[in-house]
Amino acid sequence: MTFTEQDQDQILVQGIPLDRIDQQINHFVQGFPFLNVIKAATIGDGIVRIDEDQLSTYTQRFDSAAHERDLVKFVPASGAATRMFKTLFSALDGKMDKSVDEVFDRLTDFAFYDDLKKVMAAKDQNIEKADRQTVLRFLLTEEGLDYGSLPKGLLKFHRYIDGPRTPVEEHLVEGAAYANSDGLVKIHFTVSPEHRSRFEQLINEQKADYEAWLGVTFDISFSEQKKATDTISVNMDNSPFRNADNSLLFRPAGHGALIENLNDIDADIVFIKNIDNVVPDEIKEPTVTYKKVLAAVLLDSQQQIARLQGLLEGSDVSDGYLAEADELLRRTLFTLPPDGFDSLSKEEKLDYFRRKLDRPVRVCGMVKNVGEPGGGPFWAKNQDGSTSLQVVESAQIDLENPAQKAIFDEATHFNPVDLVCGLKDHTGKKYDLPAYRDPQTGFITAKSKDGKELKAQELPGLWNGAMADWNTIFVEVPLITFNPVKTVNDLLRKEHQPL
Image (cartoon, rainbow, N blue to C red; front, side):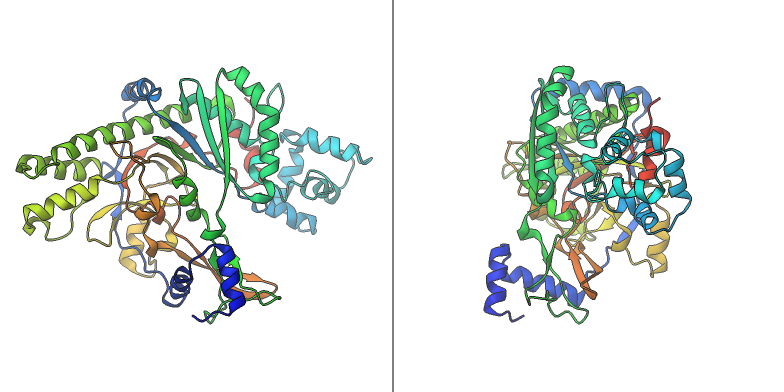
C-alpha cells in the first residue's frame, strides 16, 4: 500500500509501524480464517467442577498464599453507557415500548433517582409531574445527569442506606475482599481519555472513606487504550477510508487492544472482571469465594508447572519425567499434542514440553449458558497442530459449516469475563504477553461514518485470541457470580436491588 507523505506523518504520530498497517489491510483483503473447533468443553471434558465441600480448602489455600503474592484487580472500564440506554434514546424520539414503561413504573427503584429528582428540581422541573421526554432529557443529556454519554463505571448502580454506589465503588469493596495482600489492594481501571478525570475525581473523593471502612489501603491506577493499537479503516473496496479533510481514519480495535495495558501490569496474579458485572454487598459472597477458588487453582497449576520445568532441565531427562509432563499438559492444562507426536524424537518431545509449560497461565470461570451473549469454551486446533482450550466468540466459528455449527450448539457454558491470570514464570520473570497472541483471530466489522459505509478491524479479543497461546484451565462458577448490566432495565433485576 502506497501512502502519501501526509499519511505517513499521521501514521507516525499514531505510533503504528507501516508494516503493521500493511498487515491490517491484508487482513481486510484476505479476511480472518475461522477457528477450527474440535468439540465443546463440558464438565469433565475441559471444564472442572469443584465440589461444594472442597470450596473452603481452595479458599484457604489462596488466603494462606495471598500475602506472599503481588495481586492486582484489572477492570476494563472505558465503555460508554450509550447502548445501555438504547431504548430510552428511542423513547426520547417518541418510540415507547414495554421496557420504557417498566423504567417509568419503577423509576424510584433506580439508585440514580434522587440525583435525577434533584437536578430537575434545580431547573424548576417536578419529576413526578414532568412528561416522559422531559425526564429522559434530564437523565440522558447534558441538560441533566448526562448518563447517555458517561461510562458505566460512573453511573449510580446500587442503593444503600448510606447512599448509592457506582460500579467503581463496588469494585473497591469487592477488590478488598480478595485482591488483598496484607491490607494493600491494587486496582487498575482502563478508561477512555475523555472520562479519566471524572474517574480520578471519584476515587479522590471516596477513597479515604472506603479505606477507613474496609481497613485497607487502596493503590488505584488508570490507563488508556494506546493509540498505537488502533486499526486503520477501509472502504468497501479495501482502499483506506478518508475523513472529510482527507486524513486516514483510525479506530479503537476493541478490548483485544488491552493486552498491551495488561502487559504493563507488574503483578504475580491479576483478576480480570468487567466494570458492569457487580452486585450489592448482600450477594457478593459467592463472587468472592469463587475468585479465591480460581486463584487457588492457578497457584496449584503454577506449582505443578514449576516442578516439571525443574525436572525437564539439563541434558539427561528421564522418560519418566517426559511422561509426567505429558500427563500434566493433557490432564491439568488441557493441551493435546499434534498428530504424529509419538513418532517424534526424545529431543523434539522435550522441546515441545518445555515450550508448552513456559507460558502465562489463566484460569477462566465458566457459567451455565442461559442465552446470554459471550465467548464459549471449546477445544480448538492451534496453528502448531496442538489442541487446547479456547474462549471462542461465535464470529470466530464458521456457522455455515454444519459440523462446526453442531459443535457450537453443543456448548453448555460461556465465559462471563471472569479470569485469574498468572503473568510471571517460576523464576519471577514477566512474560511478554503480546508474544502469546494469535494474530489470525481478529474480526472485521461493518461500520459507517459521515453517512459512508466502511470496514473496521478488531484485534484478537483480550480473553479470546489475545490469550490463545496461554495455558488455560476452565472452572465452573455459579450463575449468581454473573450479573452484568447491559440495559438500564437490568438494574431493576432483584440481584441489583436492595434486599
